[in-house]
Amino acid sequence: MPSYKNDSVHGSGYLDPASKDLLDVHMSMREEPDLGADPIRVVIADQDHIFIEGVASLLKEWEEFELVGKAFSLEEAYELCSREKPAFIMMGVTFRGESCAPTVKRLCDADSQLRVMVVASMGESGFVLDALRAGARGFGFRDEMSADRLRSLLWAQACGDIAFSGSLGTVLQGALLNGRPTDASDSVESSYFDSLDDRETKVLALLEEGLSNEEISQRLFLSVSTVKKAINGIIQKLHVSNRVQAAVVSARYNRG
Image (cartoon, rainbow, N blue to C red):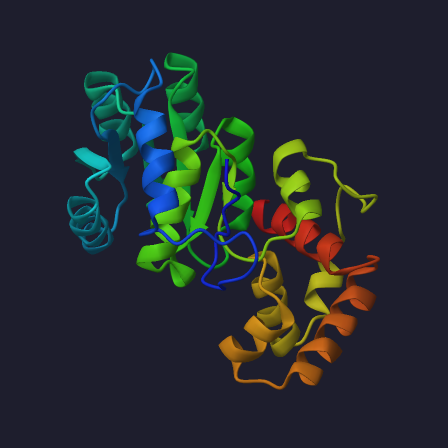
């Protein structure tokens, strides 16, 4: 099975969504008893109607997927999955401020074969932690979501992989799934976060999303050296050892 890169960088191991290799993988998947010969059935659920319609338009262009329903609330998502029995659902990580984690758990308890992917916006990493622990198998960030990246994430989910969007490191992936990946303390005093200046707070939010120094530089229109200086300040002020621990404790702090 080829390995997937969930970003737009064409490097070693990258599998283009339109490649013949990917088509071959798809055809072999269709031979699996649990997938059958039909397109893979997908439900999308989100409070953002424009986002849902955009994803729906893309799914219509990709013959390997079949959109079987749209939901705009957590209860609608659960009822739709119960009725349509999709292969997987892509859903927003929050609905009007409410975490999707309890619904993810209900869905996974009701159908152990259902694959759940959550979509988050900046600052929602704490909710992503909850959703992954509830049974979600992947996530993507709206701000980074291109058509190719979305297709790759859906493919990874369909193949049974755990799929993360962006440049999130393996250590932080372990944090999201297992809860205690680092030796960072379980809680960080709020005064530590209060000591961060505005730039450090913005950089920390992007660290939490898994962005690299170069990506943070582009997003905030800062030099890479300035980003590195801000990260060093964050590490010192939060009393952690590295950027991964800073991201983990920030996610826990924001989750509340």
